Each structure stands twice: as structure tokens, then as C-alpha cells.
Image (cartoon, rainbow, N blue to C red; front, side):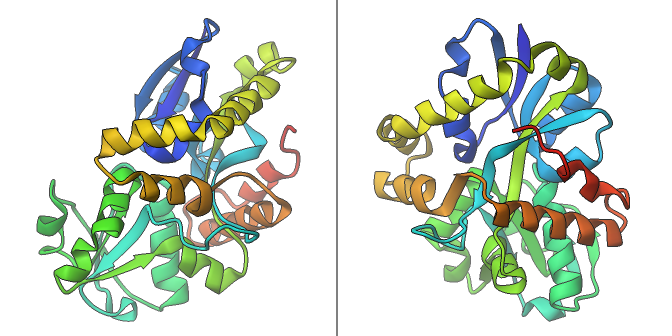
Length: 277
């Protein structure tokens, strides 16, 4: 039985369809950062993990072609709505930044964009348990996943006189390519023992998730107490699951910037040279 570290947020739901009923898998749902830690310490064999961790965890095999990403056009939106940088001032003026502890990739992206896109000079500060309290201690704060989606839909930050920036949109406008937030990562021994059937099974799960999108929308609307129309827009327009050449280029550029910032090894881009199909 392969242990899966599964992201507990809505954005990964289509990737997991039916895997909880497959006797070959055991799922444990948790935050993205904890998914990466589970693959690092061996308490899971595979998981949808923050893409930056593929460059940080030795002997991890990334599966290409599917993941959690922003749109690349053709009916999809540039913004992803669940990766928000909330700020009390214009972004070039940010001097203190709080990072969502659930995040690894978006945490790196927020710092890269602030420094290299907006020229901000800032220090990192702790977060609080409540977003409003966090915003009293910093100039800007990163929020991800379902809590961020609620903030975007409610427009609570704007109502409080704050700015809410969609990082996927900023990246797209800056780089001209979409952003990939998470990929399937598989520990090398598990990959070597199961590569004959595992990639196809994971792609089948996504196919099933997209075919049954109506059921997912109903379930998650109730779970998050959000309108079904917002859940549908999120799953069908804001998040993309089938990756294109533009997404791979986005990953290459992200790894190059992350390496320049000392966040990943200098050769991080080489993990994309032979993504298993």
C-alpha cells in the first residue's frame, strides 16, 4: 500500500478522485508544507507537494503533465484567487512580510516578486492565528488555499482598507507564462517499484475528478460554505490541472529565480529535463 500525503485544500480535490477507495493507496490529508515534509521523512511515498520542494528533497521523482497551476489562456483566468498577498501599503514600500506556514512555493514566490518585481526591501515576521491580527503586525502577508479563497470571495481585505494582490496574476503579467504551484512527487524507491502502472493511475484519478466535477462542486460548496458558482469558477477557470509547455517554462523561470535567491540549489532546473510522462 502506497501512502499518499494529500493536500487538504479544494485546489487538489480533482487530482485525488477515487484514490481513497483504491486499496493500493492510503491517504492522509494535510497542508501542502506538511505533504512535503512527509515525503522528506519517508512517512509517505507520494503526494501533491509544493513544486519548490522538488528541488529540495533528494531522490524525489516529479510526475509531469498534471499538477496544480494557474491558467494558460483558452478559457482560463490569469488569477488563481487562492494565493493572495494582502498589503497595507503599495508593494514597493513593503518592509515586513508574514508568510502562511502552510506554504512553501507561494512563500518563495511572494519574496521573489516583492524583491525582483517591485524592489521592496523587507524582513520576515511571524503570522498570527487570525488574518486581521496578522495584518496589524506587518506591511504585507501571504495567505493561501481555502482561507485565501474565502478572503478573495468575501473581499474582506478591501472592506478593511487593504489591498489584495493575486500572485498568479502578477507572475503572469511579469513573466508572460503561467505558474505551477504543485506537482505529484514520488520517492524514488516507490517510483522504481510502481512506475509501470502508477502514472496512468494518477492520470485516471484526474480524469475521474474532472468528469465528476459537479459532485466535487456540491461537496466543497457545503464544506467551505461558499456558493457553488464560486467553487465552479475556481475549479474550471482559476486552477488548471493539465500542464502545457508554457507551464514547464514557468517552472524553469521560477527555479532560476529561486536559485538566484539561494532558495534552491543552483542546478534546480535540471529536475525538469526529464519529467516522467
